[in-house]
Amino acid sequence: MSETAALRQGPATDAWSMPLAEIDVSDPARFRDDTMWPFFERLRREDPVHWCANGMYGPYWSVTKYKDIMQVETSHHIFSSDTTMGGITIEDGNASTGLPMFIAMDPPKHDEQRKTVSPVVSPENLAKLETTIRSRVGEILDGLPRNETFNWVERVSIELTTQMLATLFDFPWEDRRKLTRWSDVATATPGSGIIESHEQKMAEIMECGAYFTRLWNERVNAAPGNDLISMMAHSDAMRHMSPEEFLGNLMLLIVGGNDTTRNSITGGLLALSQNPEQYRKLRENPALISSMVPEIIRWQTPLAHMRRTAKMDTVLGGKTIRAGEKVVMWYVSGNRDEEAVERPNNFIIDRARPRQHLSFGFGIHRCVGNRLGEMQLRIVWEEILKRWPDQPIEVVGEPTRVYSSFVKGYSSLPARIRG
Amino acid sequence: MSTIIFIEHNGTRHEIDVADGNSIMAGAVANMVPGIDADCGGACACATCHIHIDPEWLARLPEKSEMEASLLEFTPNPTEGSRLACQIKVSPCVAGMTVHLPAAQH
Image (cartoon, rainbow over all chains, first blue to last red; front, side, top):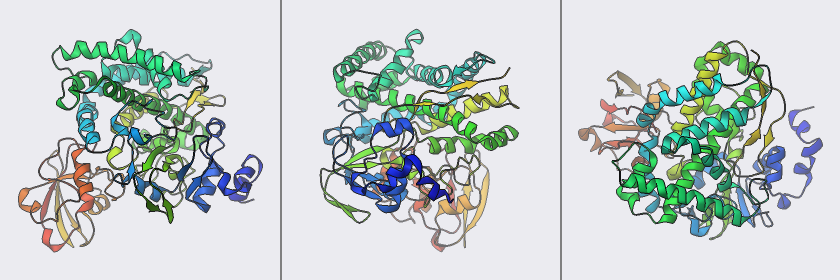
């Protein structure tokens, strides 16, 4: 049986048999169950710019091909990210909870605020953090149990990214798990198990705001420091932000620096365990880490989509998009587009052009923390291979995936280390 | 073919012959010059082929597009001579041009 024929059997039958117009790829249940792939494959093949009239989050366009996504990304004068038009997620204002943040702004304001934050995650600044990150990764790995099953997400991915964020913000160490909670809350949909209601979500975000306002006030009155809050408090562009803008940009940095790296750390171990020959290749040649890191980020695609709103009537892929309509760029699909990526469904740690993926986005909103995320993944794998050069970390069960079509991630992954 | 001289951030020099009509980015990548990532493959969409060009050569190049200018604003330490290598076509007019590479691409 050919691979395609195999795809059309069993649970995927629906994807190939249901009327095109009825396909709604935004259903979070499919992401939780990992069954969204054939739906995207069908859209790429039959209707790459696809209108869904009755989506779970209202009517919207799905853009599923790499080249079309790139076109939307680089036409920011046509496709707006602005909160007032709905923001950057399929659910209006989800990630920003309606707060203003530069990822959900258009030029010129976006440009000013981004330029303020950008230096803290520039390669030269990151070099200063490398030693700290490496020693913290080392402590986390050295503390893992031997010969017993543990949750990799909890013990490694969350712990490491939380420590990293606390370092970036110079956040009180004993309270650092609050950062994880706020990040989870910021992107959660009521009823997902994280929060029960929109009111609860806003209450927790306000608590976050109050906490950070206190830190801001401490730092604005102190000498400029190397942490993000101090940099923001002492920058001309950001010093005069309204409290909502301050909170919005904080949320952006927390979510952008937390969920994404966390799920790539988990996704990397899962990908290697599903592809033992790649894991063997890696243990034999740790230099492959440098090309494996972007491949993990492509394969995982930690943010499944970004959304824009058309500011004017326009044509994309032969379809007429009207002003005001919602346009969703499915990175998770573009990264599996065989016209852009060779053997896209395979995890290949030494592929020729691993950096050509959509996970960071492109254009003026391209991920500002891309090098930080890559650096964290690189250090994690360098330290893992130092400690276990000739045995794999074993995945001993199925992952639990997050109920979201925005954050593509995991809440658990059972792992085991023989020792 | 025209020769382009790449100077890495640490001073290492590479003299590369690039076919006329190709971009400076493509020439660098094809000849394994380190320091140019070119994540977007030349679509003027990522600013990971950021280079610095001396004033006397800069004047010979076509103006930056709006997209190139806005992407350059987001690079670390942009200078007057900042350009994206994917946006500059090699031709006899720029034969012998020196291009300086940044410490790292963001």
